[in-house]
Length: 368
Ligand SMILES: *[C@@H]1O[C@H](CO)[C@@H](O)[C@H](O)[C@H]1NC(C)=O
Ligand SMILES: *[C@@H]1O[C@H](CO)[C@@H](O)[C@H](O)[C@H]1NC(C)=O
Ligand SMILES: *[C@@H]1O[C@H](CO)[C@@H](O)[C@H](O)[C@H]1NC(C)=O
Image 1 (cartoon, rainbow, N blue to C red):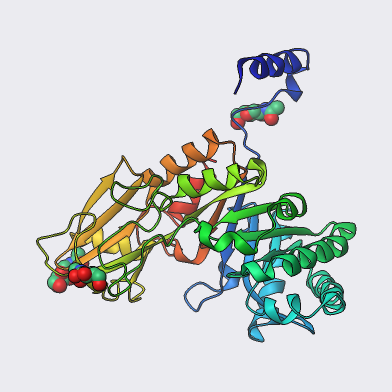
Image 2: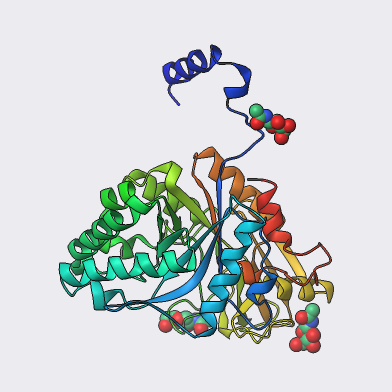
């Protein structure tokens, strides 16, 4: 901040009564939790007081309005919206994907019809807003997508419905986004700053961090949270509406040689299923805890704001409280609007980590 701006701000606040001064210990940062209903974590177990916004994933975009993915979704909508009784400040949104092409490329009449149907659908269920998660519009879609957002804005704003979006982790996917339209129409935007590396045969075949704060040596410059977010600030996304995307899952690899287990070690495949949720190529946070409890070795990389564990030929990039705190500090240093987490259901909801339930989400909540 330039010195004269700092002085101006000090003068501006100097005359105000104490109660109106900025309280640096009480945060107004947005804390978005994306949530998908799963058999191991049904909507009835979602806590009301952890996040400021819960975004249910997903609803389908169609020329006949929003379609639920399954009939069970309708009950889940009601269950989540009911949480507002326990926490009146909670906002519950519905995230949309897939199906954008079917409406956005079909002309303004179809878009207007969709906007009206969508708002009445969301109002019926008591949602506070809509989240656009098109992965991803192409450059040829840019003008139509801009118009679609303007049409949705005109329909949602009068009924005080929130509108948000998820942004890509790669600037090469930014061609379909009209930045000024996003900047003015969106209440907040989560940059999906994770998935920088996943095993891709012959293309990305060495170990790498899923979601490092800073770009490790020897990697493309924009393969980190801070690099992508700084780029977004530079091209005009407003800092107070831009959220840092944090992941509660990591990615796993099968090493070519168990003795070579550093960052950027050669890998021959995705990792075998993890010890708790048994997903191939992915360790959600409970998998990380169980592997560490069973003796896997871990390395915290303080320079890059990331962590990994390894055992035999398994190698896993993950996040934990220490790396998340480092990320939150950077997020605050840039005056971003808060964080968006993928996802609530991938944190430790059962307490197997022995750190209470939702250890990562609680770490965020108390350090936001
Ligand atoms: C400021 O934060 C402190 C500590 O959390 C709290 O006790 C106090 O009530 C807050 N004051 C205001 C004006 O919000
Ligand atoms: C990774 O892929 C590159 C490009 O195809 C190849 O030259 C290299 O040998 C591969 N490395 C491993 C460890 O498989
Ligand atoms: C480590 O790897 C060995 C051999 O694959 C396996 O039997 C063991 O369960 C693994 N331990 C952990 C902590 O993952």
